[in-house]
Amino acid sequence: MAKRRENMKKSGWLVWTVACILLAASFIVSGGTASAAYPERPITLLVGFAPGGSLDLSARALAASAEKILGQPVVVENKTGGTGAVALAALLSQQPDGYTLCATPSSVLIRVSQMQQVPFKPLKSFKSIIGYTAPQLGIAVKSDAPWKTLKDLVNDAKKNPGKIKYATTGVGSTTHAAVEEIAVRAKVQMIHIPYKGSNEAMTALLGGHVEFASLTSEFVPAVKAGQLRLLATMGEERSPTFTQVPTMKEAGYDFVTDAVYGIVAPAELPADLAKKLEKAFTQAIKDKQYLETISKMDLVLVYYSGKDFEKFMKVNWGVINRHLVGAGLIKEAATQPE
Image (cartoon, rainbow, N blue to C red; front, side, top):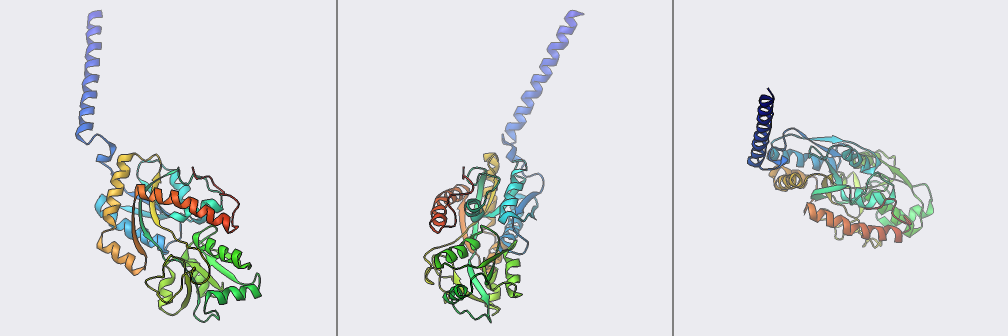
């Protein structure tokens, strides 16, 4: 009996060993990583701003192109609040398995996080997948407004302290920081009205609820239609769409403000999944339908690999910090980057 039990025990160990070998073999054949079958279900792409804005629309266009390559739906989910920080925090509450990603402006990570405290480390908590486009940024007024230039607007604000209201995409946003810098340099007081996205801010402007707005590319159709007048753009060079409009530098304010839209995942995302996602999204930005959408929105097509996007943000964290401190907008970063 004892010998029989011993034989059964050996047999059990043999079965277990063979099973392990077969499992390992199947793992190797399938590619040796979890990425071989990934993705096996839909992917959620979080967006931290309201539907209809340039980030939202560009993310939806990119998702539509990427799902053709990945073979699974890429579903956009808007999570507004905190000037984009709520969506990034929501991303970190999910498993780092590649099934939840977030489309975000670089400015939320490296500018908003310096002007307000956020529940993550901007340069440590995330793994960048791709930087894929950049919005045009500008200051606009209604076409029937009395101000023909940015200087006219600022001079009026000096004469009427605390009476001129302006809309942006949120506290600490790129568009907010640009106006605050103007206010500090010109020593004027204006009332900031933050909204959840550029579309809402533009609606407020067109409805006469504010005197001007600092916006991303959503202003382009309204300017072309004659509803809005663009006073200045914020890039290093003039907008290719509105070559007659001066830059901030040309308008007398020596600074440049820009942002890149990118896709990030939790920092713990396995390297093989990150590589697969980067490859898919890199292919997606070459898709004809995506390119047509970006062109219609007057967004600027850019490309940063995951590593390059991380380098871009690391370098610009320091640049923006010096810029914000020098302008008197902050004494130090509200959030430590790493």
